[in-house]
Each structure stands twice: as structure tokens, then as C-alpha cells.
Length: 112
Length: 113
Image (cartoon, rainbow over all chains, first blue to last red; front, side, top):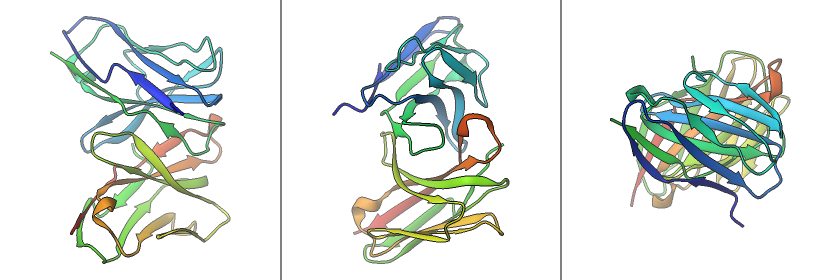
């Protein structure tokens, strides 16, 4: 069972570049979310989705965009990368909101 | 701001000892969850306790919840070196849309063999 798969695992970008972090789950979960983890800050919610076609903002949405065209996939787009977006990004899914979440292993992103 | 505040920030113990971590939160909740994160990995769900429950057990884990004090504790008994990890509490706040989880900053547990 793959669970939640995130790609890439590591990425280095230059300021101003754009990129998409991929997230896919094979558990038929309706609820998916993106977090960023910074030292001393815990996990902060960026965007979430309660089902295909439905997304909403979390605590720190600025500079990020999401879409949910299928149940399985929930990509996160950085529109114009900034050094402040250097972080570890985690995607998670659960069968419904508020329930235990399954996490991917993260994407470690550095922006120079 | 973070809903969950965890205490202590770091805990170092010997194998076989018990480890206790605490979490405080600010608002009413539907449930509170504890997660473990090994270095370089994603979070793994450990246990969920509902707002109408006071104590829950799972193997060597014991979680308590005191909604009047808005606090929870995670006890790991007879710790092992493999328990070395960061531990996070997360709250499902009641009254918010779509049951978003809010995570605390975590406790780093080191268990020395």
C-alpha cells in the first residue's frame, strides 16, 4: 500500500521560479491538506480540500495555489518562489475532516 | 497562532523509564490527536481521544484529556530507544469549518539505550 506519495523529495529553486509539489493518495480519502513545517513553528496548514473540486485556505495560504480535480491528487503550486517559502512541505489525507490523517514523507524545498 | 502548546519542548530519558508530554489548547474541541514524527519522515497518527472521553490506552500509550483545563497528556510507558522522535498534539476545533487540525509545536523525545 503506497498511502500518501509526495514528489519530489528534495528541490532547490531560485527566487521567482514557480513549481508544483505533487501529492497522491490511493486510499480514496475525501479530505486532503498541505502543511509546511518550520523549526519551532510546528505544522501550519496552507490549503485543504474536502473533495474533488472543493478547496479552501488554511492558516498560511499566501503564495500558494491548489486545485483538486480528482480524489487522488492534490498538487500545491508555488507561484513565484521566495526565500521565506524554504520549508518542509507535507501532504496529508483522511477519510473525512477531523479524523486521523495519513502523511507523506515530505518535500524539502530550498529557495535561494 | 498555534492552538496546541506542548510541554516540555525536549525530554531526555533512559530506556525503560516513562515519558510524559503535555499539550494545552485554547478553544473547544471535537477531538485531540497525538502524532509521532521520526527524523526525516512524515507524521504518524498514534491515538485519538474524543472530547467526551477522559482517558484512552493503546499499547504502551496512555492519553488523558481534561476539557475543563483544556489540556491533554501523553504517557509512554517502559520507553525504548525506538520511541526517540518528535511528538505532536493536534486539535480538531469544534465550530470551525471542515474540521481542520491545528498542530502544536511538538516535544522532542530522546530515549537513551
